[in-house]
Amino acid sequence: TTAAETQQLMEAATVNTGVDYQTKHGGALATSTLEKIEELFTRKGALAGVSTGFGSLDRLTDGLAPKELSIVAARPSEGKTALGLSMARMMAFHQQTSVLFISLEMPEHSIMTRLVSMETGIAFRNLRRGSLSLVDFERVKQAAVMIKDAPFGIVDASGLKVSEIGRIIRNNV
Image 1: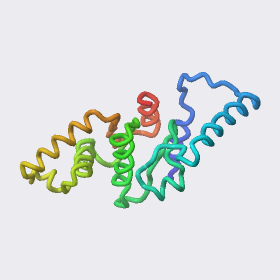
Image 2 (image 1 turned 90 degrees about the vertical axis):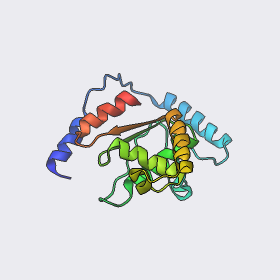
Image 3 (image 1 turned 90 degrees about the horizontal axis):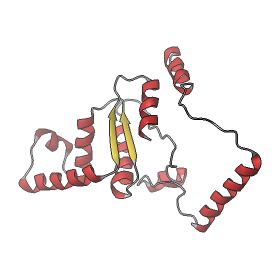
Image 4 (image 1 turned 180 degrees about the vertical axis):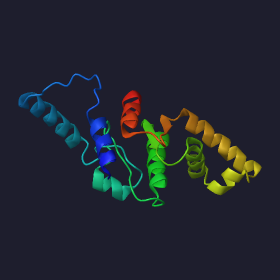
């Protein structure tokens, strides 16, 4: 990262969120931690977090933990959007878990078209061109209804600063 990017991250980390942070003492933390471990114990090995839809990733991470920020990062054209959308689709559409998808690289309509492609099995390029049969178009309409009702949001964040993205997350979570 460059010095400017590092400075942006530092600024984002120190933005006043208006939250009154309380010091928690060992006794209270020990009790709440024991309760959490007991809850997990009664689940007998079930994922502690939300399934990504990728079994090997779920085994490594124990699922994505609620209230934690998960970032998919890689070099250009490595499949970040495809991976992130596959996980978001599984969580929002099939598990009804709220998802906020923030993209720094792809406009919101392209993201939604990819989701429709994934959900219907219709090639992305055919959706972009409108090369659909009547049956395909009905599948697209059914997918649109399902997507509309899902707990899923998209933020097209291209060009935003890290601190602005932090604000968007705080306002939406």
